[in-house]
Image (cartoon, one colour):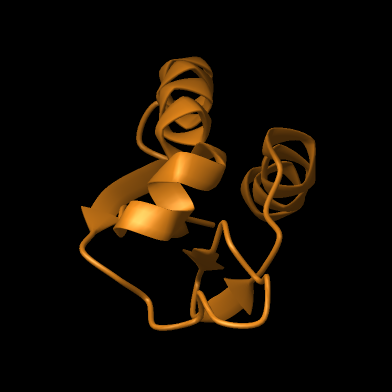
Length: 79
């Protein structure tokens, strides 16, 4: 199955680590060609209440996203 990932690149999410997360996911994308689609988006509108960084995976919003958390969820989809 295809993992469609939207990474929020709004100011707050970027400051909280989504730029590094994007780099990690691009590395993962190389390991699973054609199975991970990554899109950087301007804002996912979930940055209030300390929820940043925010990522959307196949329509599911994931707040307080860490590389480990997102990679784990992506691997569940692509394996």
